[in-house]
Amino acid sequence: MGVDIAIDLGTSNTRIYVADKGKFLDEPSVVTINLDNDNIVAVGSDAYKMIGRTSQRLSAIEPIVGGVISDFFLVENMIKIQLGKANISRIVKPRVVACIPGDITDVEKRAVVNSILSIGVRNVSLIEASKAAAIGAGLDIRSPHGRMIIDIGGGTTDMAVISLGDISASRSMKLAGNNFDDEIIKYIRRTYNLVIGKVTAEKTKFEIGTVVKPKVNKKIVVKGRNTVTGLPQAIELSSGELAEPLSEIAIAIAQQAQDLLEETPPELVGDIYKDGIVLTGGGCRINGLDQIIRDYVKLDVHIADNPSDCVINGCGYALRYIGQAEIDENGAVNPLSEPY
Ligand SMILES: Nc1ncnc2c1ncn2[C@@H]1O[C@H](COP(=O)(O)OP(=O)(O)OP(=O)(O)O)[C@@H](O)[C@H]1O
Ligand SMILES: [Mg+2]
Image (cartoon, rainbow, N blue to C red; front, side, top):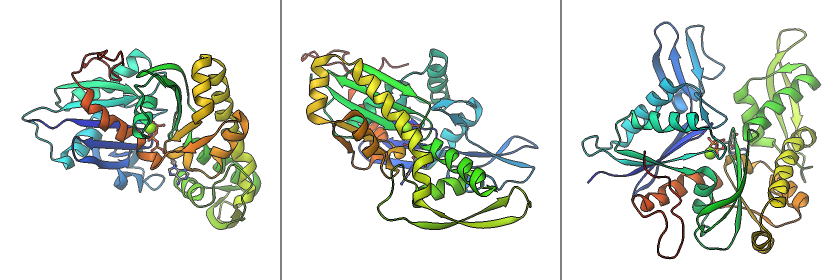
């Protein structure tokens, strides 16, 4: 028997789940190529380490931008190389469940399907990222009870109200975890005349990033190049000073959540009022984001367990729906698309 697999092609991370085994692979969505001959030199963590450090000959590329494939050739090869590590039999071709952001166009959807079909699988069923996130967070999305989920990834934030296996209202925005990194770069440049790279900005976010005034003001040393002297320089940065510039992104996300609630049918709003909102995705792990959303919409907001893995675990769980009728005897909708 062929083994079925789930794939989450995220802006920041590619995750692969093998049926009955669980998450198998979790690596940055980065490919380094040799510009002389277009050969792939590294993928995943090896390629991530090269961001901002490559020579003129090499380029470290992130081939998924805002949840959408921007370089088909690189994505196809990235999955092939990563799947090679999973040692999956190519003789009995696997069936695949893959997730897609909410507001994707048909052309963008087709690019996801084709890139996965090109690696030699039997077929691909799609699931919206927010549905997968809800399943992975342990919510019973096929019940008539309305649930609200916000998945904040690296490049996209997908939010949805789900009941009976289907999305009843949703919003998708290209504002997510990586925007905090961009904001840290801008803040340090304007305040200290210091230019830092993307990887340093993300590391700074992991260590001291916050969107609310922190209880304890943590300090770290950040190194970069002074824009005036052109020389290397180190500065001391405290978490307290990041709260205000980073809070704007958090407020913009909270505002979308508020707009989504306004267009949600009243019965479902009642359910959400009772249960609150669940946050998933790596982007929700920045300090205080749950608090900002809670204060803004005046509802309970919980961060799911292992938020970064909810989408891939949900895709993996959804493997069991492959081949089932669209609507079952209880009237619940199969969360997967017809296989391509
Ligand atoms: N501990 C943490 N604190 C703050 N941010 C974090 C943390 N861990 C991960 N992130 C951020 O989460 C984002 C990646 O999240 P995730 O892996 O869910 O994204 P993705 O699925 O690849 O992207 P998308 O769903 O947008 O296509 C990155 O911006 C990363 O910096
Ligand atoms: Mg994601």
